[in-house]
Amino acid sequence: MRRLLMFVVLLTAQLQIQAQTALSYEQARQAVLTAEEELMTGGHTHLNTEEEKVDDIFMEYKLGELAQGFRNAEQNAAALHFFKAKPLIDRSAIFRFLQKMPKGSVLHVHNTASVSSKWVVDDLSYMPGLLRCTTATGQSILSFRRTPKEHKCQSQYVLVSDERRNSLDRQVYDRNFERLINLYTPVPELEYPTITRVWDRFQGMFDGLSDALIYLPAFRAYHWQMLEELYNDNVMYTEIRTSFKTLYDASGRTFPRERTIHELYALNQKFMKLHPDFLGFKVIMAVYRGYELDHLKDIVEVFKKLHQALPHFLVGFDLVGQEDKGKPLYSLLPVLRDLPPTARLFLHGGETNWFGASTDINLLDALLMNTTRIGHGYALAKHPILLNAVKSRRIAVELSPISNQVLHLVWDLRNHPGSQFFALDVPVVICNDDPGFWNAKGLSYDFYYAIMSLAPNNAGLRLLKTLVWNSVRYSTLTEEEQTRAFKILELSWSRFIDDVLEGSVF
Image 1: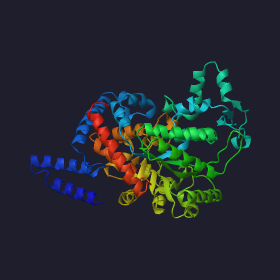
Image 2 (image 1 turned 45 degrees about the horizontal axis):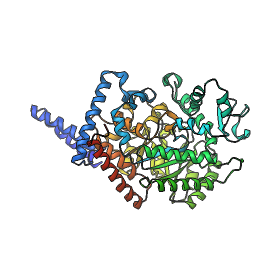
Image 3 (image 1 turned 180 degrees about the horizontal axis):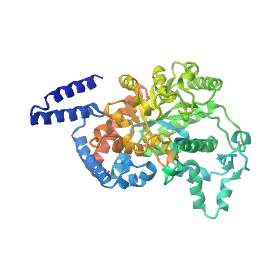
Image 4 (image 1 turned 90 degrees about the vertical axis):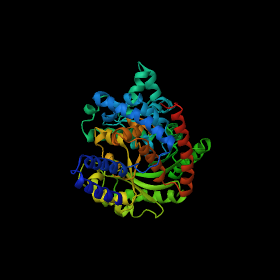
């Protein structure tokens, strides 16, 4: 607030004298531009001499790409829907830069949709024993077990391997299979004309895939791939949302939820041992927000038990699902207040276009419940008092630009409220939410939209560096873990800067 007040005072003073002379007009004009630049995210981030050289190189490419998009709207990836822009982004020099850039952490990702759909098709769908059945509504269910009651299937179970072998063209079969776990379409405006349509399909993909992923061999392979894809995209740490469903094996035997968290913990330890510069992951229990209170109370009891066993690994609690259709946070206070004091809240809030509805008022209750971070916070810009509270209390907003676009909140990401958050230096971290479900992988695609669409045209390395450092600063890493993280990040960032100057990035 102090910086904002100084800006207002400066602006008022300059505007009072700007009419006196041409020089005063120019001075007033420059003062306002300078004040705005200093106010925004990254405005006070220091760049050394080498970083300034990289910033000059980066800005040359960025402004060139934006200028090309200005001349030809059909080539303006920054303004296009991701499904239409992805081929352009894949060829972008800026995107190559972002892929090579150390990105710190991703703090909002749902494990069931965290892995690229290509891997699910090429690897998981070829695992022996994978079955498919169909519900009365035509929803395909994938599983390695036959449990008609839970799956609500009306059709017989068929082996995916048999379907593939009997198909006329294996590649065509695989493309059709990928449609089960990927929202991609060349015409999103036609296939998903409303938010209800896209959310129904989106939720259906979770329903269709989730049982296959809790088959123990698939569970291990899938989560290992999740870490590989993040690591290969130069992410050093992540915090994943998961529901801790009960695992089962090839014999159909099921295991208690304690097995699920210990499997994740063991996998985390193994991956960090093989990749010493990767800080691993921690988990946030994510529960469907539409459950009845009694059911939620039972889940909270499970959470307490798991959290007590591994409090530094299972760090918090969240509620997920379409926020507009879920129960308001206010109605869930009796359950959320029963969480242990060592557990933190990481609440989705304001993932909506509504204003003055229960959904965006979730932001108020999230703040009153002392949420550690806010998931999405899309409606936050409509609530100036809450926005100021988020800023003054340094509560990070988990921005997931592509998710907000694909799930029908905004078409042109230049209109995303994240631009206002950047302009006012609201604490933000860039996240990927559910990349596997919309033909993405890793975090670089969301960073592309952050710097090319949400950020002002003249924003470059200062903003990017701030976002990267924010991702560690607002994580749940302990003080000791953060110290190590920043050391690793400084080293990898320095190497990256050298690589750019040596010409091996662009």
